[in-house]
Length: 328
Image (cartoon, rainbow, N blue to C red; front, side):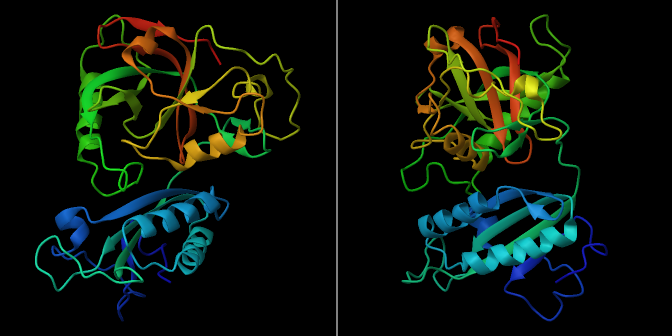
């Protein structure tokens, strides 16, 4: 294994390895199919105290993506290697990129195989702080980071609708998200209009069918007016660092999240929350989010595996109108 203290924030090739892999980072060939055709996938893992956060869910992503893209990956062995890197990193982020290996067939094609195509597997360990100042106790007992309230805005950029074999995957083809993120950054850089606050942190995206699906780097959950509320009491969780004032946030009321069967990325934290609420009075309902729903929103949060839950205090619509939400 490479000593990351001598290679901070550098890419390393986990497979195939060569004789230099233990002493220096190797470079990506311009012929790499991920670079040429976006032929592969990636996943980003938070690391705390030498452990991969939500490791089982990232393991399932490796399995599902290898199967969907017909890639030959020993997922158990790869996860074991990632855990060793996490132990050495202690605190930060692991970004894993898997691409199909070079093919004898010219162009897009690849040689079919029962075991799937050989891969190139790349890893970038980064030392960074994973924010856990406030943690929320999920109904299943797991803890998830809870970020401060912020604001969101509906973006004019749209993401692609995909065939069922690709929808929901965290593939390398993310150009629509790149352009959407650029739009969000331009809005942040402009002189702030009266209805756009300084706390703007995320943009809500539609797909080409017109449904609102996800954020630029996150999944979205929402509640609607006139929907049932759970009147459960809030009890102290007993976990140090847990904000008990927010404990009932996820278990009060019916939460919805858009489907990933046509577009978007089925994120790790999205599935963590769906599973955690599955045995509660109001399990998460998979439901499209339309233009007509936006004025009826009463709560909305984004989430991803690094930042956890990102609650929003308001949403600026394309019309410029602002929908205010219940405070956390």
